[in-house]
Amino acid sequence: MRIFSGESRVTITERLHLMIRKTLIGLTALAAVVAVAADNHPHKMLLMDESRSRVHYVDLDDASKNWEIVFPKRYRDVQLIGNRRLLVSSDSGFCEYDWDTRKQVAEFRDASLAGSESVRRLPDGRTIVGCNKRNADKTTAIVFHELDKANKPLRTATFAGLNTLRLFRLSSRGTLLFGANKTLIIEGNLDGKILRKIEIKDGGHFYEVLEKADGHRLAAGGYGGFIVELDADGKELKRWGGKPGPAGLGFLFFGAMHPLKDGRIVVANWTGHGAQDSEKGHQVLMFAPDGKLLWSWHDPKLAGTIHRVTVLDDLDVAAPFEERPAGSKNP
Image: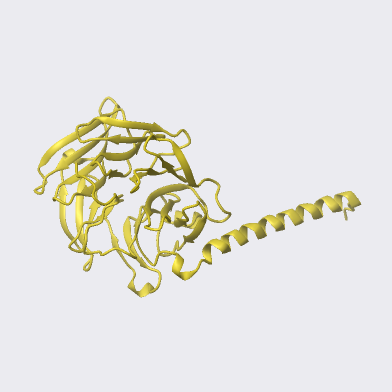
């Protein structure tokens, strides 16, 4: 039997107390996030599940209403386009699904659209598809294809030297907003011209860039695990999140966002490509305007890793929805 000196006993006791305190602090923080008032979190969500190749409708008030659509491959983007239809990006184009039957009702594929990542349907019926291209000489480009109502090509915008497009969105001016090359936030147009390039060195593949009603931009920092707000000149104003985050929540990769009307922001926290990687961290997070984490959602049995979230509480699934300010111009 080993006998410890009084000093050793004190040291061990202090270490145990410190471990206990850290554990209690972590559990308290987690409980504070999860035990949020029932009227202060989303009630209905549409979630793109990357690791299990599907989209989920989740009703947090009545699980019997939950449903899912299983895709043949891992698709990235989804949009409510009206007439109770979902527009979904595919690997070489896009497809449409009926909200009520969950059946595919339309599809468009073309070799020119290989590497498709993101898609947006415009009010006049045009469609823009964003693609990643890798050429035979190993050079890269991000390419946007504009199609008319009949899916005939109108314009092609090529941004040579850029790579790793995830989602693109449209600004109030009708310009393209997207992340590229890990640390870049880009604004460009359908003529292939870069209008603005901002670098944030601790970004980790910016997943989505959105414009707020005041003209500021929100960008989800990917592996940086944060959301950043930039003013019209590209100056950083504030951040939400940041690693490591509260104990037990597993901040890894911040994906698509849904800013709510009251200033709260809901964001997907993607945690890996594996079907069970959703066990590693909470899948959906909600932040207050001041940056405080208000709520999180974690159900790894129901869903895999989430990279896109749309809050449906105030949306009509029969009406088109696009994340840009009212009165925006079309490209």
